[in-house]
Length: 156
Image (cartoon, rainbow, N blue to C red; front, side, top):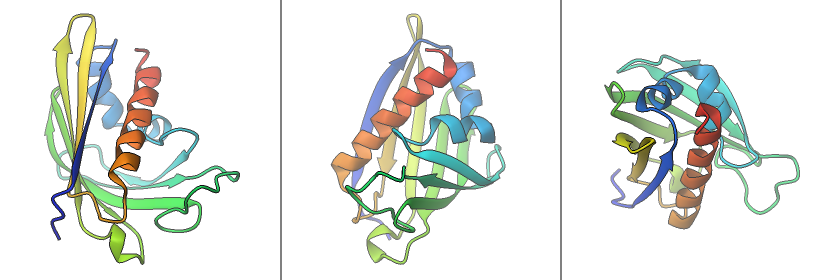
C-alpha cells in the first residue's frame, strides 16, 4: 500500500560521514541512537549489510501517557531490511510496523543521505509512504529527536 505521505528532516552533525554511516550498520549503536527522546531500543535481529534484515522495538518510558504505541501500549516494534547501502553516502531502510491497527500497515521507506559539509556532515532523512495512523508532525519530531541522538552518539 502506497500512502504518498512523506517528511524530510535535516541536521548538520559535526562528525565525518564515515563515522555516521558506521553507526547505521552496528546493532548496539542503532539501539543507542535510534530511539527518539526518552524511548529505549531493543534489537531483536540485525544484519548490517545491503539486503540484511533487522527487527527492533522502541519502548516508551513508564510515565509516557500522551499516546499509545503501535504494537502495544508502550512499544513500537518494526521489521525491516537494508534496501540500499552506498558507503558513507546513503542508507535506505524499508520498514513495516508490527501492529493490528490498519493505520500502521504498509511499508515505509526511510532514506538517509550523508553529504560532506564544512566541519562535518549534513544528514537528511526522508520518510516515504508513512502509514496513515502516524501524524506527519509526530514523524518529523521523532526524526529530529533521532538525529539529535545520533549527533550525540557520534560525538558531533
